[in-house]
Length: 209
Image 1 (cartoon, rainbow, N blue to C red):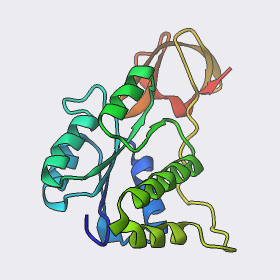
Image 2 (tube, rainbow, N blue to C red; image 1 turned 60 degrees about the vertical axis):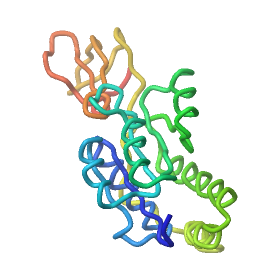
Image 3 (cartoon, rainbow, N blue to C red; image 1 turned 180 degrees about the vertical axis):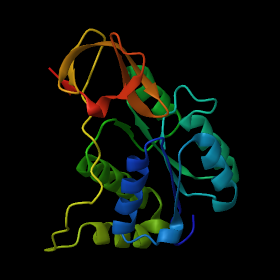
């Protein structure tokens, strides 16, 4: 790992990419040490030259390449590349697979900005203890993230609150009460099909009744 750690964020949600970058820059990391992509294939293309030290990625369960598979490929390019996983679905099997893959954390979506920041700081603290040669650099990063006596303004990017939904739930959409028919994850985003409506609607646009 280099003196300036390189982070790659791979997520289908532009809001997650933007906030993660904003968070890492807030930790004091140079902008040139952070890259992002919307899918594993694009992440791998970036990673071939960028060679990240830390991958933060969606699970991408339906993709041709999952987040864990992407990490395996990137770890071949830069042995020791760390992994952090984000997922709408977290089951005991997901947790077991994440542990087997050596993931520093598995964070359930949707999450708040504060949850992602706190989880990332814990991962960096653990890494500092595990890698003494990185302790000074990581300590500086964490100190920048938590300056004593200084309150930071709230982040400009706010992740949407996505309701927990299942088939049969009643929701409000366009000021009308409708019924959920299907709930799926498409391109990393939770989307819903309503009875009598052929289109897919982002769950963030619905209000659960």
